[in-house]
Length: 384
Image (tube, helix red, strand yellow):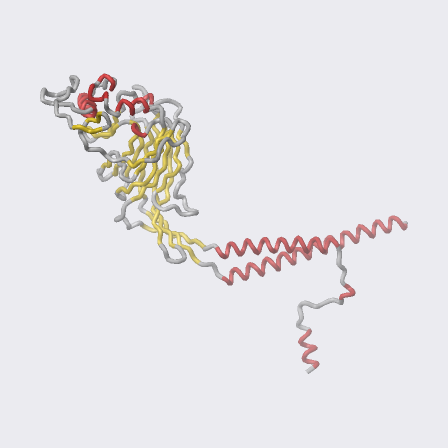
């Protein structure tokens, strides 16, 4: 039995030296402390990697065309009032959403960017009454259209009626203070504040899941012969500074690590009046599957930016404002969270401990022998 135990001891790969033959040095203690710190840091890094899920990517043809496309936006226009800014959206299927504000809020800002009042959710008004002395009364008489009527029976009982008549005639609108229907209307006050305030437009809207566009631009929007235009009377397009700040723009849920909002923080700086900013977006539908099998549908997108001046007759055609055109990719990206292997984690920990211990031992031995050789040379120099 004793012989068997003696032979078994020969398998020991970690032979021990006697305590009397061990030499403990200051450099050895320093290397040991540094090596221990490195081991701890590498261990924490590996633990963090193990606890975070492994994300795999797949690419396949997108067949989910049924649900709506959600557009989240938060855009500030510092020098145009909310009353003169409209948000319009349309898609390639022909459906237009003029002044789409059902899910959009506007917040009035001063020229320094401070909020003037609480945000308001704009509603499209259908009333055809005049506002006098803070009360609404129906207008029974036939108001003048100031020469813009197409026949004698046409009446312009409200300020909006006069504006519409001039728009149909394509005439320049006179100053609102000279129009009787507009004297007690809010239009005069809105006109005076048009360039003295800023506006923050934020919220979300849902549109058909096809390619399309939306824009924020000054003036009242309408369609003439299937052409979308904006009426900025009595101003000219060149007085509008279309500088804007995109605080947020995304198409769906924000996902960490995905390129869902690359335009956040972008500033469109207008160097002159009547600048048209164009953003061409390529949207990639994205599916994100979490560890608990929760599925999130969102969209990533890339963007190409362009701007041009539309202030004079020699400039390119267009309207001042920020215009966003988007197309949907036929492919979908799928991200799937997966748990990391405990065996892989254990292997890496052993590699870290063994590797640092070995390298530290080599470095300590190198220092020990180098210092000893240097001390021996000094000793020989003194005795010689």
